[in-house]
Image (cartoon, rainbow, N blue to C red; front, side, top):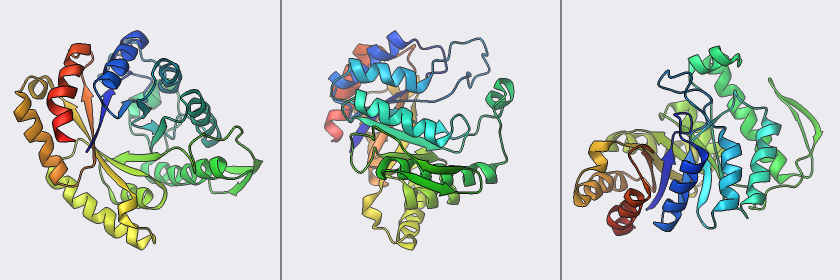
Length: 284
């Protein structure tokens, strides 16, 4: 079982605080530190500071040494595929090959409306996500890429320097386990991440993922399965044995990496250290 610590970067957390938690997670033995990729508060606090995901990850890349870094997840509505491919390749170099790209179709309507970001219907967003996955992988693995899609067209495009990781940084596709996301993960991703699922939902979706992998001609064992869980004050305040029991139910359901989404206002470095030693370490 692997573990990642997650924070919501759009809810007022400063870079300094993010760095403190990332370093604490690294010292506590977490495998990864990830953050959301939003430019407005999901709680409707429009004046709340919201730092840019990949700018802060670039900083963390230079101020941590072992822990992996990434987004959960970057919406395809924010950036052109060549832009996100270039950004992630750059941060991969800055981190000595510790970056993961979480990619999703985008979902937060008010964010797009208030900031003037085009927000197509769901079917188009999923179609764009598939084209972006094809383009990003192509840019990272080929000397040049020509692509003619419904939404994106590239002619002899290059992405140099390409990422340090080979064949490319891991791609995580995230969502609630709908059929479209499962099929995209089976075809293009290294990991499928489920957003706040129950253990029963994990079993159901992972069964569908196995079928989708076989339909895509891929060994289901190649794809890592993960779950993002809101680590509420109630869960965080429970006895370590109760926390371990809660997480063990997800491991039994087939989850291979658990992402603990913590409240940075209530989670300090000491709490992360205890979480690592009393909960995470015994479950490995």
